[in-house]
Image 1 (cartoon, helix red, strand yellow):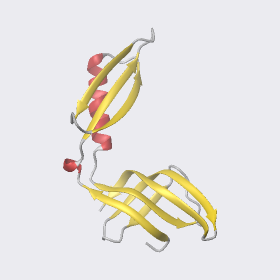
Image 2: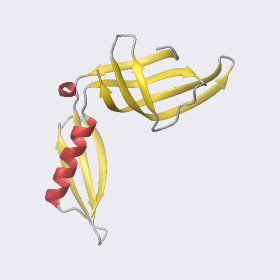
Image 3: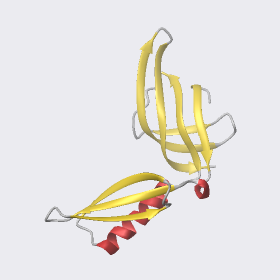
Image 4: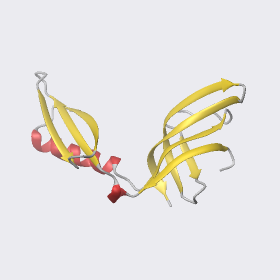
Length: 130
């Protein structure tokens, strides 16, 4: 892209991603109910809910699994300090391997050194993938 100095993207297809979701519901009496779904050997993502029974928690976990398993880019990119990027901004990305999409920004790390003012932004959830 026109503002990207360096990109560290990986294009992944939804069906190739191995994830396991551990959903924990904290009950009113502070007891916990735990449900796991997804790939047994997948990367673990833990999500929390409040006061859900086991059935509702299973639906919650399945929804989270679908949210985190997506076709699109993962990774980060380095840009100049301007325009300023913030967490939850939307980035329109055109990668060097011709993949395009709109992504939420998950995190931004700012540095200032002999190379100048730089931002390293991590891609989050895709909003639109072409």
